[in-house]
Image (tube, rainbow, N blue to C red):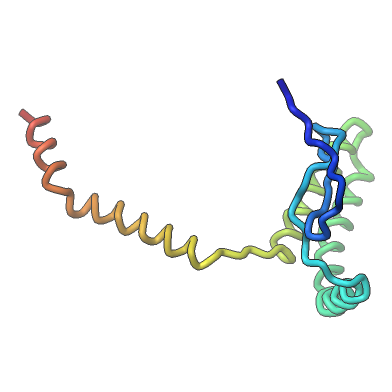
Length: 137
């Protein structure tokens, strides 16, 4: 049986209510950084000023040739072609403007796991050596 969340009676300012497709009732989601609209606008315009030339060039490199090809395709191939070009464009945007953040904890955890695996391969424990000897007999 699926239980639906009850509607809250008071609004917590630290929680933004999202409406997922699976439930008509609001469900709590973590709030983004709460900045004023003016601060968001200022930051967005500053980022645009820093990046617009490269973004325009990248856009033209994808869409001008893409539309030239689209104009010469038969009707049944135009939609799949534009969808593929759009996918490539979004990948390019993600590569140039996306942010990839790795937490120091994740790096330490992954490096410890790698050291354990390599050590296990290079210097097997005595129990593993004994098991190998018994398996060979």
